[in-house]
Image (cartoon, rainbow, N blue to C red; front, top):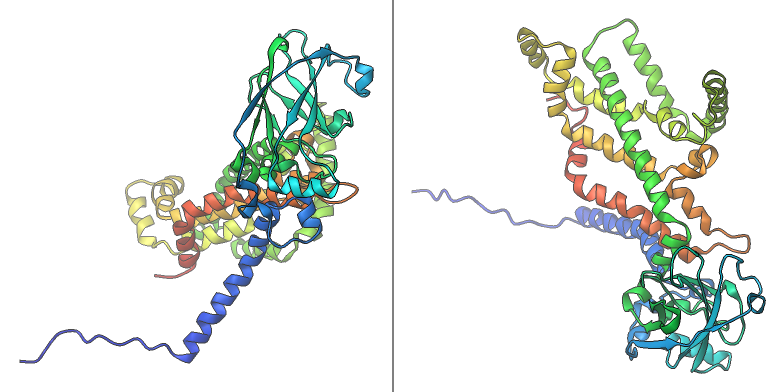
Length: 436
């Protein structure tokens, strides 16, 4: 009796296959280089980036070894004349001064201070100020290290004991991240308590925390989120209706209109920037003359979302998928009394989850990453997160380490979106336009 067991074919790696795998692997590595550079730069100090240090100290054990225990200090406060702190805000009254001694610092700070012939202990001068006369307690303290009295060194809001700030070492301005972090535990002027703490997680993520607060990233993130949601709602509505009309309905000039519509994909966005801006000004003037209200279009969410509702790519993608749905389904639905709208909602859309997810991912990414157009027409209340990154470009030099930390924060929502939608996204791209 013949043996009917399946014959296993031994896989042999052909030279051509090997070359393909090597080429793909090399391409993947090259594509990941900018991403890893961004992460490494986001963990560096300003000095490390300026001196082109390849590996940041934050990714070594140096800043986290032999860290001392937390120390709480009861600070004796005395009244001080605002003139002694020249530049103190007039609203910061009354002013009380105290001091804290830092007995031990981390290794990076020790090495840097040694270059300036400075050794611990370090004196931290504190200016406690009550900026809100209606609220009892002192909620801000200013400090400086090394004998100078610059009120610009740093501020900490500590009414609820949650604020923290690392000392800004005068001889080592990029060493503030290494701590210790100063936290106000009790802001009663009779027993003002400051705690010195070394938190490794803060040391590691210092640039991310600083970028988030310095550039008001929470506001920019909320603006971008709102713009993405509004744009997606408009794009889905317009694209679904237009794609269905092109795919399932007959009207005069349909093919010609669709070809002209597709031709707009050949026009670069930069070429259309100035004409679109001039058109936005005309629309703003028209709305102002009709409703007697300013900023109904420019400097509002309307100009950032409505012009992008008609997405040529999204309409084309959905049209190709809608066109491959068998006509027998529509004939059966027509017998049951369905019209075009009901057929679209109850039959076509449930079958089109994959391309719809692709539309959501693509347009979500495009809206989230938009920069030039919001920079031209957006008001302060609607600036997206991409424009917020430009806040780190100063007159003297760009704070690249903070910019890269902000860029990392910016791409996190996109990575999360793609992670949860990658299956549907891949299916939508792979099946669209195929006839079954």
